[in-house]
Length: 253
Image 1 (cartoon, rainbow, N blue to C red):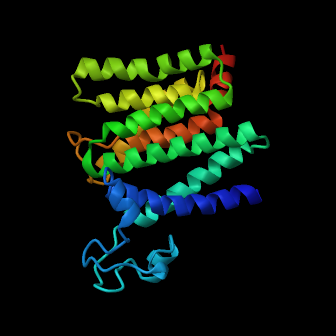
Image 2: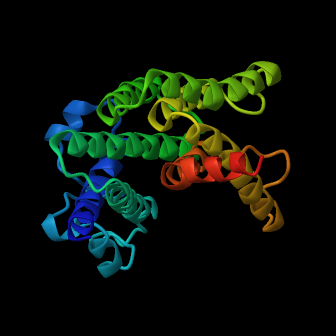
C-alpha cells in the first residue's frame, strides 16, 4: 500500500509533465529548454507556481500575475495520472525485476492513452505518432507480462475486429481509424478474454455517458462525443475485473 501511494504521488508529478507534453507536442526542444510560463501573460513561473494540484488550489485556479483563469485540464490530468499509477501498481503489486518492468510499461501505456484522450477531447483528432508509441509499449507490456501468443492474438481479434467493421462500414462517420489502432494495442495489453470485456464495456459506458450528456443538454444526438476517454475508462475496468467478469459470464453457460 505504501509503495502504491508513493507511485501515485510520482504519477501526479508525471501528470504535470504530461500537460507540458500535450501543450507542446512535437516541440521536443521547447519542452527541454523553455521554462514553464502562463499561456496568457507569458510570465515565467517559479517553483511554487508549479507544484502539482496544490498550486492550482492555492491560487484559486488563476494566474498569480495576470489573474487569468487556469485551465481545469492541468489539475484533472494530474489527478488522473496519479490515480492511474496507483490503481495499476496496486493491482499488480510487483516483486521481481520483470514484474516491476511490466507494471512500469502498463502505467506508461495508460499515460499514452491519457495523452490521446486529451487530444481527442480538445481537437477530436490525434497525432499518429502517439498510436505508434502506444503500440510499441503494448508489445513490451505483453512481453514482460508473459502473455501467450494465442491470448494476444485473440485479444487483438476481439478488441479490434468489431471496431474495424464499424469504421469501414460507416466510412468513419461513427468512429475513426485511430480507435481501431488503440483497440489493437489494448488487445495486446489485455489479451483474451479481458479484451472482449473491454470492448463491451466501452460501448456500455459510451452509451451511458452519451445519454447523460443528451439529458443534460450538453450534447445532441448528432454531436460527436470523444470516444478515447471512454476507451481508457473501460481499459482500467477490464484490467481490474476483465478476466473475472468473462469467467463469470461464460460459467453461466
